[in-house]
Image (cartoon, rainbow, N blue to C red; front, side):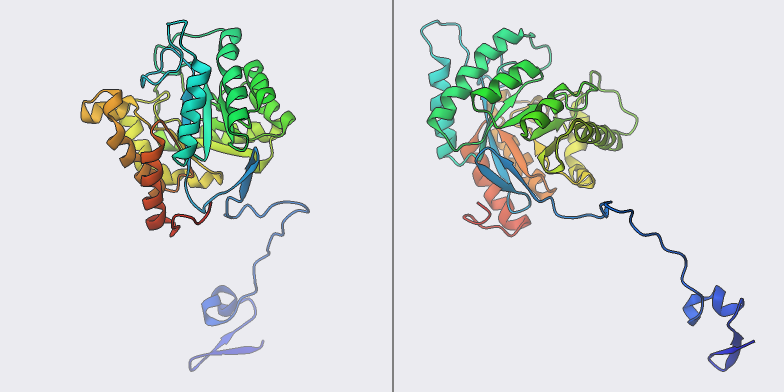
Length: 331
């Protein structure tokens, strides 16, 4: 038997102490697995980029700001562009607001024709399409390079919106079993936002369940043919969650990074902020700005907001601190 030396003592090296004690310099390496042919490593990597319309969004360079265009009569925040008086022109109002948001620094715009607030009145497919399609068409003509999103759960409305010039699908029921919107995104080769939602605010472990639901949604979208780079996730602040759930979600936003996709967050003017401050929707700007800064510190990539100029300014400061990105960089 050959001998090995450890200090002043000779130790057996075959089937003995050195095999069992690698820190002493012995032992054979354990068998290693290799990756199967064509398999990704599965290790953390950068988020890469996503093409939305005419623009490439490089994730991690800075935080992008999505402006909200609500073409509804019953938005919770009071900003709906549909009004009762027949002389008013919601399409013209939408174009004016979109142009103002673009001038204030919006990176993309989200157009919705059905309120998603609790207790909202459902609208028919034809009604929703009649609201959003003319607005998307008009905004596309006015702002040809602005990336446009359509906020809908109806595949027919989504298809009509894409035909009118939309570039992105925003699905507030992205975790539902129905993959029709994902299949449409795959067919049209456009990105999709998969948002977390539940019919009831019932959880055992909030954040792990949100992550698990979103992971299943990602897997479902991939099976439907959506490419990895075309998936964005949204934890669904205010959807199927109590105010306490929403605050806990904000506290642990960084845990969503495990999913490996860019994160969109919409807290703007929402009722949880009103509950904290006991203020109505039109007085929740400062609260929204606080959540924007906190979200960026947790790695959020897109904030969806009503007040674009103020949130752009907050995001630029937060980006300089968190990402080291100064205004003009990462455009």
